[in-house]
Image (cartoon, rainbow, N blue to C red; front, top):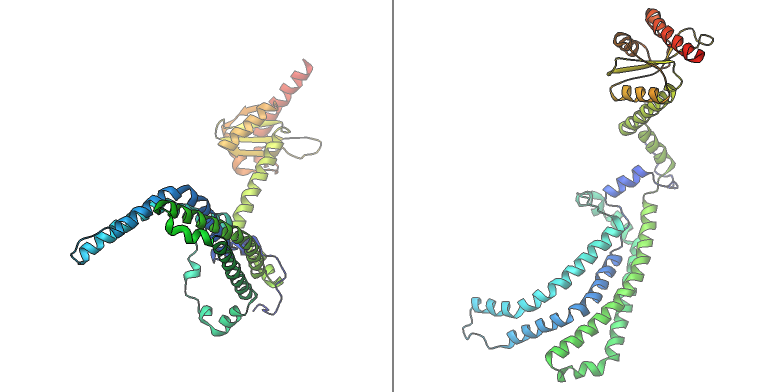
Length: 355
């Protein structure tokens, strides 16, 4: 049983980080997402103010227009539809802009991340002791302080803007409807921009805090780290990856050995076996590379590149491939056949040197 009293002093492994991410433990600031939405609205509102103002005027005109004297549900719904529809249609671009900004800000923080694990039942969430610990945790204190600061600063911003523009607000009653709506739109956009800038600062600070909290939460004890490394070391995925890399290295070494071979014996297409023989150092010829199909083709290409003789001999190539491992000497049963091939190769080599 692991010692739970140990302190979490070790950085989380990549595997622990992936597991935490699947469980929904990621650094994400809702304030930063809100800041993105508010910034998009502050930019989009002036761009759509004209169309939105006209739509609101139409909605007010439709709402104030004399309707049917029959007071039933059908006529009431028709009247509400005529009143609300123009404004609702005009608000669609602004809503799309805000939703898009929120999605993009979330993606920028955590990437594309969907996890159902946080939605699964967990008895620790309804444990009163655990709930009290969460309530008194550093995160909760930080959230409370942040909320109070936001409410206070936003309240001050709203009060300051209203008091500064009090005369203009009183004069709205004297303006034409479209001019009044346009002025209010500009006033609200300016206020939203100020709040958005504040929220950006709060969001960045919150995101840094959330990252540090997540890093602290996923830290591991020494025992956890040892157990994690042991499990990772013998995991099927890692074993398969190590085996693949070993095969790649072995093939690379084989290809590098082909240029030192004395001869390559082929099937001629299916098999290729490269042999090396030094009578001063070796008791028998040694297989330095072998392969089938594509690897055999690469061995032949390397042999041609380095001018290593290629001798087609299907029965011998098959026997060498099946009976001899790379780095091993050939068996006595193949001495005669290999000797005949090497004799021809060495004779041709001496002939080239003599000429």
